[in-house]
Amino acid sequence: MKINPTKSKAICFTRARVTEPLNYSLGGTVIPEASSCKYLGIILRSDLSWSDQVNYTVKRAWKALHFTMREGQINALDRVQKKAAKFAHHRNESNWETFTERRKIARICSFFKAYTGEWAWKTIGGRLETPCYLSRGDHGKKIRSRKQRTDIVKYSFVNRTIQLWNQLPADALGILSCKPSNFRQRVRKLLNEAK
Image 1 (cartoon, rainbow, N blue to C red):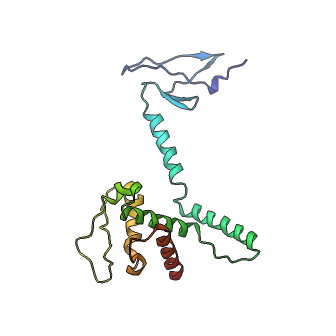
Image 2: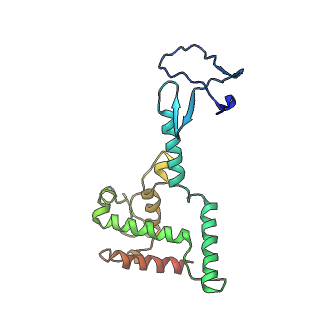
Image 3: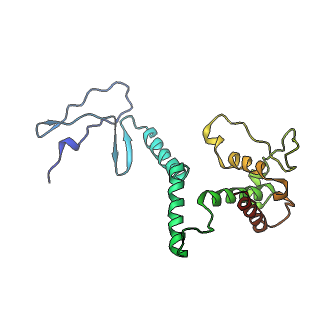
């Protein structure tokens, strides 16, 4: 078995503030000193801190959660859907909703469940507040939009959906005592008419 010294790193694990430089060599080649290295998928730091591993994990989680947030990726998914529709219906045009439209309808319907106090959504529904004033064009079920300083909260589910909810016309909301499936059909019909 041969060890490749160019792929090796020397790390001294200690919490001491001042450390002596490491002078390790293998086969006449000096092994470079490093402050961290990845071993079996975990990033190990010389000061025994987990900050690099935590930052790496958080970065990967955000990528996984927001992979469809980018406009180019959403458009790519829509193109795949159009090709599938063309293949299934043997024609260029189909009445399938785009990925963006389906997500918008799903967000509004989830927000409807929170607004009406459905069991799983009560925590969100309890925090919704009515605005201080309503203009002539507003419906009576308008929600006060929250002012946020960070982008993470600004573009969260609740804040983005409050904007969509407030833009719905009053007749789309109608009587909120209906079933979620009926509400979904009403919103879908409204969005199709708006095209």
